[in-house]
Image (cartoon, rainbow, N blue to C red; front, side, top):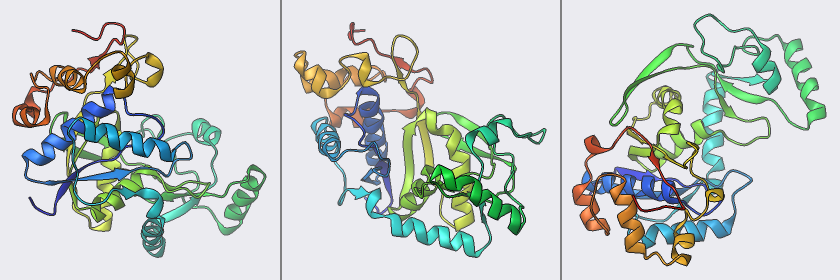
Length: 304
């Protein structure tokens, strides 16, 4: 094993469901198969995070055979590191204050080549008086300006080991929100470098954010990991699986009489693998066999 690692980074806003456990299991197996370490990171910057879910999530991951190297990293203990990177970017004049509300961004005209939802650059080159007016506009809202990265405004193509080539437009994205919280694209990049993460496995709903993160990595002189985005688990309505869908967590399935090995087997079969334990799963997992289609799970009829 080298110092380089794969990782799993849950947000403790609830118990992990089958989709979370499935992604974590793939991430663990991919790292171990590649001879990498495997680190655990808790994304606890969101106000919805609760300490009790940290314990239950880590217990569930251990219960299905996932182990990790070293101590668990908590993002709430890393704010000084994020502030240091923001200061570096400010010194290079690569950040600017943004006073736009969501309505401002929605209604603003965009360049012809910019996709829907891209930031139109409204606050990019304001005068000193215009910036002061922007701060005054936000004062009644009890928030300050966001900080956006001054980017090239071009497209960037990354290669994902499951999804193939993906091209994303790099707009001036937020690195620190108006409430002072550091944005996901910044903290993920800073923490991956800190933990020497060289392989990132996560759900494919995060594929869209990857070109932005690679852009920031290159700007900061960081090495970009290999990316592996795997399909989500959906409910029978075609929506992302959630706790409200019924018995979808390890604890809930245990209450219905399921053994952990049976739940492991259920996850494995969704990936075309016959296994009820981590050793066999690790040996059998092949990325080119992972379907690009999501796994549709019916809590009322879990057999398939």
